[in-house]
View 1 (spheres, rainbow, N blue to C red):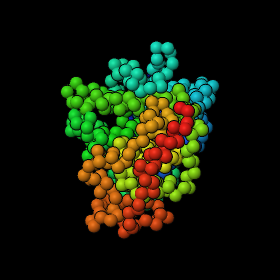
View 2 (spheres, one colour):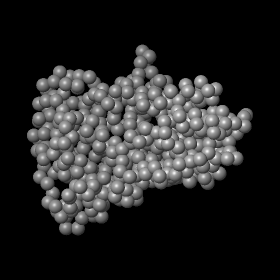
View 3 (cartoon, rainbow, N blue to C red):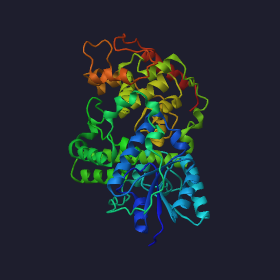
View 4 (cartoon, rainbow, N blue to C red):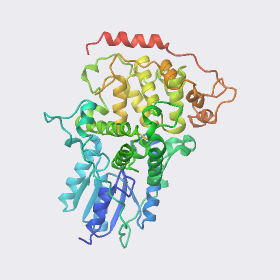
Length: 472
């Protein structure tokens, strides 16, 4: 036990329960000083993720205040900020939860080295994933490149029971100075869209736990089929809260295990979806190129369009391709900050195959628009859809958005929910799209709905012809 303070470096782990770094800081003894640092990695976030982070920090600060603590906000390079705080507070330790993207790993490594050089205890803890990427190996000692064997290797692995929330968080006699969250203007790039998206946000740890509980009670039994029926509220929607650590994957995992043991059929599939997220982090850690390059190098010469200024790309972004299923998904994204997972696959396939555009164009757009943005899951999802990634959909599989609509939205309820043009009485959700989009887009619900920019059959054949001319 010690009396020197511990700095808790808060990142994408905005919760009090199942927080290994917080638990360790309290157990160490002495005051605990939670700190969030707005560094370059925060400034580089897209509009929606940065805005959602701001909401999350506000909610987390309130939760800490209710627990007798507070959240200190500082701006600047993480190493410099932490060294300054150590000097100001006399802290003997800095604890944090691990991140796995290459930029964060590089930053955290340099921070740990600098702190230890000053005889400050610096420790990182797991919690953003269940299975540390370096602990899951093939029989040959390498990393997994295909999901199914990865799943089989971890499905029976023990995941420790989630940690309880500390009964108290010791506060220092004097708190260090803090920036004001409002002065950071994290939501500035959202502009008028923030007001539209805000009602769809489930903010904070308590809301995340409620969302999980409702899903396990009312929805998980039918998850196998309901998760693909796009007009039905049949998914867990936990990605929003997992992305900022308002709930831990271990908490979701154990809830899924309990539901499976209770005989709820869809729980097993839910557990596999959690492990798909783990697989994304596993791949990002072992092959960071997943985020920026074709994971399969043989795709480097593929003749994708990389010009984001093309009118077809603009039509895709605006939800004006003339393909209702695709356009509905893109409009759901603008109104809610999220998109149904089945539809994400359709819009990604359409961009990369029917329009022959590079997956990075879609990846960057999602980085800007998703409130549940996650670097690993977003990159893997796009490369899977494009065919260039690990465990990818076969290159010759081109989702037909028309037949996909007939299968998963046969009554067009999803389409009607999000597309207003040429409807006598469009839904409020469809009209909200025109309130959320940039004012520079001269669009109106009174516009005519566009003709398809690419014929579905012709687009598919063009893609297949290009694939057949490549040596995969």
